[in-house]
View 1 (cartoon, protein in one colour):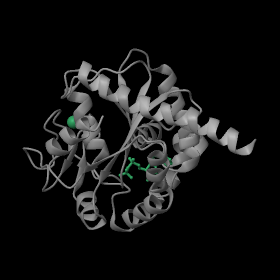
View 2 (cartoon, rainbow, N blue to C red):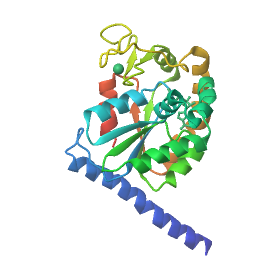
View 3 (cartoon, rainbow, N blue to C red):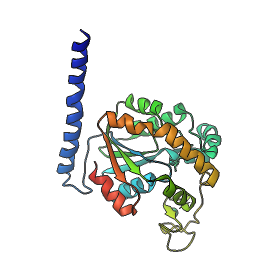
Length: 251
Ligand code: ADP
Ligand code: ZN
């Protein structure tokens, strides 16, 4: 009885995984390769990677270059809520300044709002959520189709320099780096002319805490999505164009 039901279970799961990969390849072919991929409504691609691995930069670039992709960043949603002074923002602020994760229910509610307000057949690049196993389970229960989880792999020693040199436009959210991706005029956004700022949590102490949180809470997701057969990896220790191209090739 037990082995029979186990066999049924395996039988039910295995083809699902294989089909998922085949469908991804078919979608890639339909799109003609490169940046032309079109998925069905509510398809999600998760970006995994340490803070400073370039998730936001890569997702922002891909969404700007490709009408079929949208970019949703949990960190940006939280920072917007803080800027607006909403109840969720007030609750999130202290956690974020310490480099800790905000409560699962708080961020999950924000993501759920965005997902349910999203129509059309764009693929959503989900950057920063889920960040632990509990959030992955919440996402799985939202009834969305998670196409892939792409890990942007960057060694810890590179991460630190990246985060400490990071500058952001508070107006249009464009990201820069003092040496790796400098704006044309120092300290000024190329796109909208606003003075660039340093994120409050991009200081040496908080960065160490965020890296520790990443290794302890977020890294288990690599195995979680690996077991589902949808994990992809790209080398994040390269120029943004190279990483963005490698990312698209993994979908
Ligand atoms: P980074 O990836 O560089 O850490 P983010 O903008 O993604 O930057 O996140 C900044 C902070 O926002 C995190 O340190 C955390 O406090 C909070 N945060 C973002 N996403 C989540 C999430 N899914 N769950 C809990 N906290 C989150
Ligand atoms: Zn700007």
